[in-house]
Length: 285
Image (cartoon, rainbow, N blue to C red):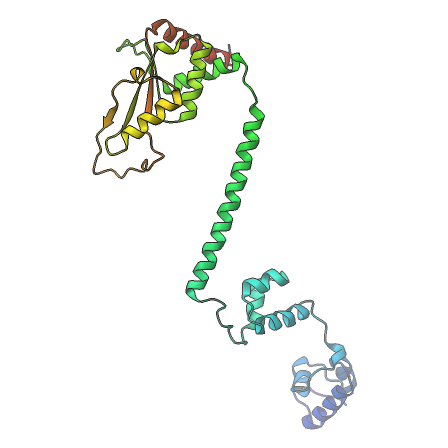
């Protein structure tokens, strides 16, 4: 049967034959060859509304995922849970399940908040354990210091935290100030290494006037194991009402000032040793 382009005699007859062939399992290509209809638009019109046979349908890789996603959504799963379970994108999940009813919230606002707080507590506890493990491992790597290591360490500590001589203000005396008990203990041990007798030391506390000065004085006296007559009068720092202080509470004990009497020669040795450290690290020296 010959057909002119765009015009067919007995279109309905052709349609009946096309549908019959479709129902027998013919593909579009076989129907085209059988009816000699080579215009794709007309060919599609002839079989319009008639589903293709199953064997012509190409299986899609995501069909199983789609079915599973719909099943999980009907069970009340969120997009995040479905994504974690199936490993597919949220955009695909949304496309597959958008016609399904939105599941009821699993938690009330208060319940959700409590769940988040519990999760944060667990996270912070895990972070604290990791932090402590790292610090303990680092501490164990140090071991016992040699006298030379302690000497060099003490020079660095003093030059960072001790008072220093200025060209415009000659004050060749050894005075160390710090709020860290560990720093104070290391500094005193360093003075022992240098042969500085404890009776040459004087101490005094610097602390905010709103803090418990008496408790701080007792704390520092116990730490350095010094008699009361080795402590000078505590310096009380005025509180600025415009400032919000964070160093408050029982753990705040101010700073301890450690001064070495008759220490001009010791100061010069410290300054010279620091210069030697600087020169020792100069790659061009």
